[in-house]
Length: 294
Length: 127
Image 1 (cartoon, rainbow over the protein chains, first blue to last red):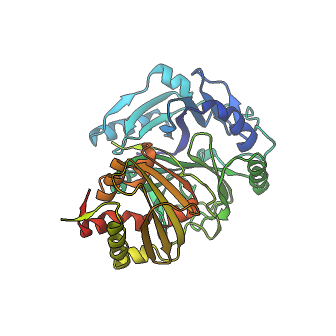
Image 2: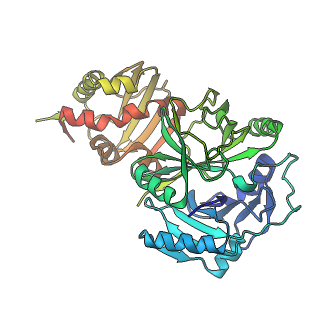
């Protein structure tokens, strides 16, 4: 089984409507029409959407959408997960239409997070119109970006993700410990940090093509009084220069530029700091769309 | 007969036990911070302060206004945290504890805070 990329993310939030402003005006994403009333769909490239924010009673990660190459790969993945003892369910026609994919299957990981494996997301070349002037996001074969998730059992989560085809990128041991994984040239599409009995989403990273677009967003966030949670800085492992802003839904958005890519010859290393410079934590409340794990 | 939880005797015993624990000292090295923990419904002190100073901590009952981090929770949650049947992030995620203030200092001391249930178990507490 080989997941190709993180294709889409779905979250639930009481503040879904705020994304109609935050997504386009701050992040530069495009607001697009979608199937579910009250939900906010945000486009970052040719794909129909990359982020869906659904109304809900609390901030929480609803699903992660993992892209596979085609229908044969998806069928094989479903068989492999079933054989490994996971309950795999078929997405309904309505769900496929809402996600704008040809087919999806759903599986729950050991901590209780929901994953959708799919193929054939609707691509509409030339349709992306950024919410504010920018050169675009680094997506394509690298998918929408990366997610950093909290898991209750790192070993169990690692086994699950390796089953999906992820490979370790590196590990950081600092005030928090985190393991990083890749499934395409992006240094990491996924990072996991363990907190007993807790699961959820810490942040979503989106990567800009032009560093100036990061700088413009940095100014916008501060000018509008939106909570900046980490100042501009560079991570030691993926070399990303980025800042972190609190989204309307509790989790953070890492807005970055300049990450390295990995290849087949990648060697795992460890780091003892989360940043080379900068990334001073300036948040005044805990981050994350977290909930009690299974 | 153990030490009564959230009393001056508890604060003194916890201070001594933490500072005698090499893992705790290592985990809290390099950080200077003051935490205020407010405990609603406590049968003893309704709050305590943890003053961290580069590898040592001083715990006192009561309240101080000039702190870096404010944590607020109820007594049953405080007992669960003390016993290790609950952890801080879970308490926040489930709405049983609020945290506000300097998150850099709070997260920097997270690994030291994680050791508190083991240290408190060694003291022998009455809740």
